[in-house]
Length: 167
Length: 161
Length: 107
Image 1 (spheres, each protein chain N blue to C red):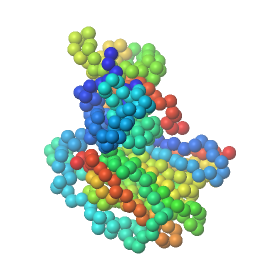
Image 2 (image 1 turned 90 degrees about the vertical axis):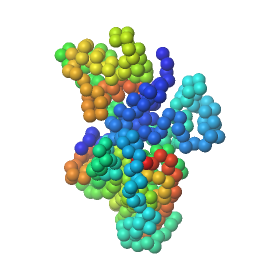
Image 3 (image 1 turned 90 degrees about the horizontal axis):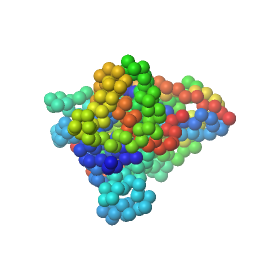
Image 4 (image 1 turned 30 degrees about the horizontal axis):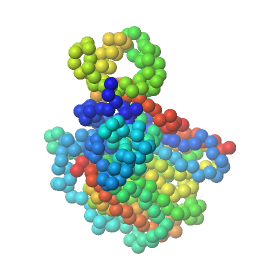
């Protein structure tokens, strides 16, 4: 749940919108924190920035068509289904539908990795997994590499809104 | 397994995602982008619109501009311009021009409509460098021009400032 | 240019109906204001025009400037009197174009 939200929030809000920063007044902010509809975006004392967004920004984020992050989610979906590597498999071959099998996965990273005995980020984890288990060539992650980002974003889908975003 | 993510994780993802989307590490790269650049002025903006619309004598009432009062992110501020018009072959909106009076340049976007548009309403997202007025004019098929202006507060500018 | 554009519009409409069309194309829309690490200016590179036609006839054209946000999003309207094809063309500063088409049926 939070994985997709974070992705979309970051995509829409840009560098300037630090978690918790808001243009809403203090009274309004308090009112929103108390609104029961915001319960699912709050964990204890911690609130998603979504709680404090103005309605126009929320609309931009919630619109699967207009939220530009979904262009990359779509790329990721295409890559998810594409065969890659000497094993002749795609991600889907083992993991089937990402929206089911990968739900909530992205936001468990970075996490402790028993193999290396260190913290591992999602990108590094994918690189290891794909090269080792799929026989994929060294997968590039990063801004210039469409491939890596695509996988990253597909793995980051923890919840699709269910709305069809284009026909 | 925690469902929240730490600021460090968010920063790492955020940086990658932003670069992807071209929103860029703008603020990180430079903080002084605007200080050495001249910005548009209300006078230059008025001149620009007068040139496009062919007049500086404007009517009001038929054109409206919908924008947030406060832009949470100056890099992408939604706007919708609506013009009350039947959009028939004899009576339609020919063009809608949008300008901003304190951006690096006043011009934002110009729409050219036809009767086939059916409804004179257009939406897009724009960049605002700082708090300023956004001005929209609509040129009608009979030559009359309508104007509307809206002040939008910007706390985090969309040009890296 | 960047990636594939997206267009949202209904597949079938009533004759004479005015429908809203939404478009989005991924693009940096480099303003020409930003500076690189060495202090030089990153040159402007944007999509400067978006055109929509229906069965070959113009519906809406937009001239874009750097003040339009990255990943330009447009929504506009079109009156549909007959079945046919909408064609959308995006043009960048280098003159390169990207097009996509969508069919509409009149019930």
